[in-house]
Image 1 (spheres, rainbow, N blue to C red):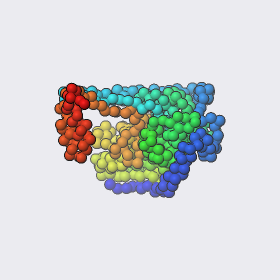
Image 2: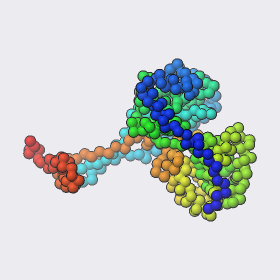
Image 3: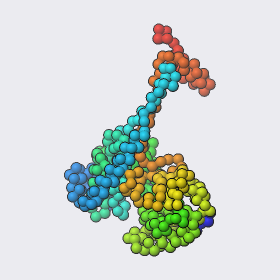
Image 4: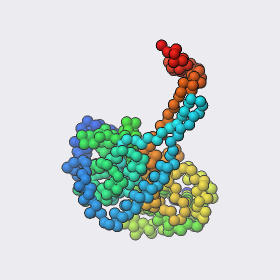
Length: 425
């Protein structure tokens, strides 16, 4: 492997100390509830909502502020996300079987009772994140779905498109709040908001750190970092498309990163040149180019087999395959958040309209975890139903194991089951 373009990452920003700041915010929210959340909202967002909770009239009014075309697109995306989530749910089955006479084992699928969906608001509104977090929860059967988003620039509250997306997704409660203080409100509850059982959704490093600190008292989906993509391409790929896909990831954030892995030096060189020229005409080109220069890499592999091996080690959030036999290349790939197979499958489709979820593991976590899906909100809880006959067969073995481990209360608990009902005292 030859590195044709190396990242020039400046890690100062991502390594900025946030742990103590977040700890203080969370503790203040725990103690002071609504007042703390509103105070931090005014401090960080420059906006003081009259109430944290968005009322139904405001949600209804938001529809009039969204163009018919955008409304149709949100509905289209919502339906595909919902359809995929429901199909995934069909793959999750309850289990019940008799392993031996009188011993029935199994598991049940139990939705979490409540969840909080965090919808970030940065340079632009992100209604897609509202759909991706709330719709799988609804499909899973979560009874109470709360969602929050910070006030949007230029609007007195949450962006109308985000409100509409939350409503279409089936959110029950909407709150105008963001940052670590919103995570604290979801985790601890306030006068206005009851605490939730699980928190999902991406956010900045303060949100991520807050999720880390409250995890254990509530469930979380993951600790996500900046967006990532690896693009595997050979000489059959169109360098214009590869460059466009690289820039699409880079424009997310200055800390987003892109890796192009190819066995074609010609493709690598043409793509590198096109990234610069395409960035020059994008409204977000300056940001995308900064990200590319700081965090972009081009790796020249000896073969596609080596490209696959390199990519499995990277374990990216998004993984595109654009080769002459994309499906065959994809067969060897094992570590990724979501896989995009073929020249006509850009990550952008997955971000918005294809159907699978775009809340995905980053920072090599795809080696051992998956993205948000309907199963994120479902507990697979085992059970055992044991009759007298089953207990008599198991008691002796259980007692022996317990004695070996020095747990004589366990041994006694097993052995008393060997006594007939008539022999009970």
